[in-house]
Image (tube, rainbow, N blue to C red):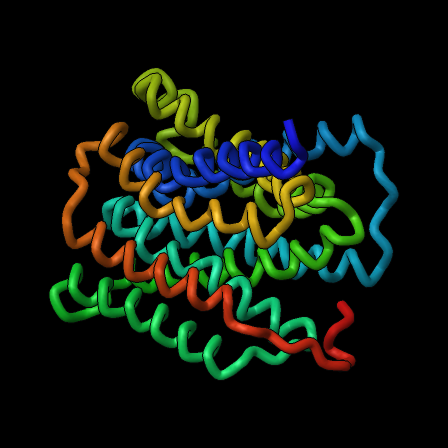
Length: 303
């Protein structure tokens, strides 16, 4: 099998895992609660990442990289999971799939602005159109006014996009699996104490554990060990083997895969409105990613 083909398959597996994140989060927050679900997920992922780093024993990040990792941790380990936990407490996961569909374009935008590049006018136009589509969709679904959960979903999309841009830059030097592992382990400093705090609240973890369904336990393990951690191995290795430009296009399938996962695991029908808006967002993202971004000399290009 050619490296490019293998990269595409690995990337597809990663995106399949990512697309199940929102439906799984809906299951977990329903039984564990909004904030416990976020901290349990992050703690599981952090413990898995810690085991991986202890096995691999990579070099410690230098001071500059450690600071960049810390910034990335704030967005990927806290901003994104907390945002989707709040959103999935009140909104259907299919709705989240449409809003998060703008993530690839926002990631490219943040990457350009953060690392000394100048997007073309066409790129700015497509970014504005894509963002407008997401806002219009949210307004449509909220019957004219954005709810708190809508804002939480938008914050999650922005957090993921900025975090991915920072992580992509670090991955060029450290490798994707090592980067996501350091990020998750850094998050343990807060996530582990918070997870223990929620576990020992009344009713405590041992009291509610027998009442939790098997599907919810599976969803929690999936979020912590697969979605937050292992899926990144497939994704980053796929990008490395097949190329960012080619394999990155696989991410455009994620909104539609989220619809499918929501219909399979939750009582969420696939609606025509969702399909139309998701298609429009993906089309804009595809156009935007073809727009030129000029690299310029800038001090901000260093992290």
